[in-house]
Image 1: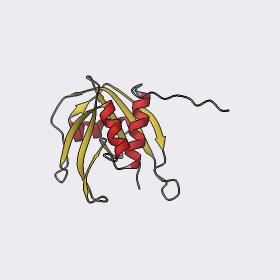
Image 2: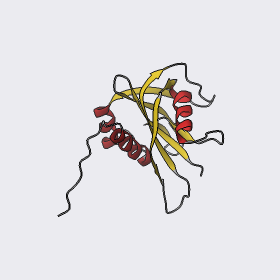
Image 3: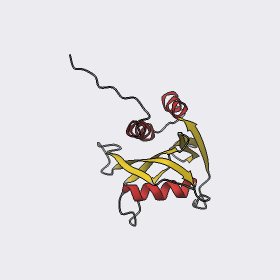
Image 4: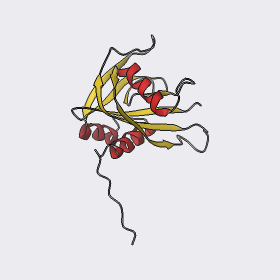
Length: 149
């Protein structure tokens, strides 16, 4: 499997940009983050994330950064998942989707996006992890350190 990128995009009014699209593995339409395989022309994960965000949603951000690189399944896969956060995302053009893609762009508050992740509304484990990592990096999710006893 190739490396890919998940984008946690936050609009200027603090909404999380999510997409609904058919996922063959589930056999159903699923809610998730804008995401995709890194292409050979992508210089780094941030460039790939910007491309995927624009292609799938028509949104762009001038404030994007890589927040994590993780292993989707270290037991069986050698690829990496890159998590990119995009702050102050704003609409710039119609999406540029592949002819076979049917994607619905959805906007949720931070609390509603977290609720979807916790309730099973977002099904994919790497999407849930990416959402939480991205929200924490954007300082939209309170993370507390546990004291060792």
